[in-house]
Image (cartoon, rainbow, N blue to C red; front, side, top):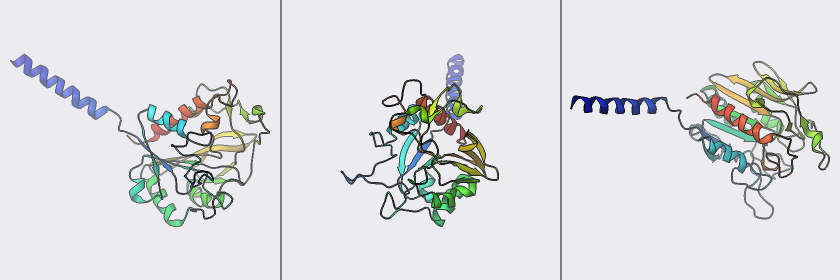
Length: 260
């Protein structure tokens, strides 16, 4: 009887230990407020969304997140309540009037909610676009708080299918580039950095990826939507490009920044 009770106690203790040491579920929220483009054919939201399975979507990146145990969702306007449900918050290509007749610009109340959330430990991802296709002015009102300013330029233009024009083969010693030899980045905005912000990837002296610590939180910035469906696999890209591996590395890196 004593042996049985001892075994039961050990099993129960082991179960509790597993529960206590298992990583918490990571919740990833993708913005659909500042990026709120709608299809001219269907009238439905599209472009850089989890549910968009066309070239323009992030469905494949969403699958990478869920494959690693994360839960993905789509967020409306950021508030203390909505951000409180997210560990990682991704803002991609905020609209300008060139894309949406009445854009939802990043306003002061949004900035207060987002910076407060990051300061408390949130992981923020900012993925811009070149100056002609993104509302950089209002995005910079937010990003400058983290020492990041997106420049209204377009680096690495790619003509037709000349993919080598977007090839990058020189990397810093950074987890996002672990094991990589070649990635594809096109028509990207550069960044100017101040304060604690640090470059992650430069191209001919221009910063195109950066990161910054802010309070207990973390910010990762790219001057392009980068790993959307069109350029994450080899539907279009030649086989020697490794954007999927880069997307997997980035996903692991972001999850690692969440305070467990």
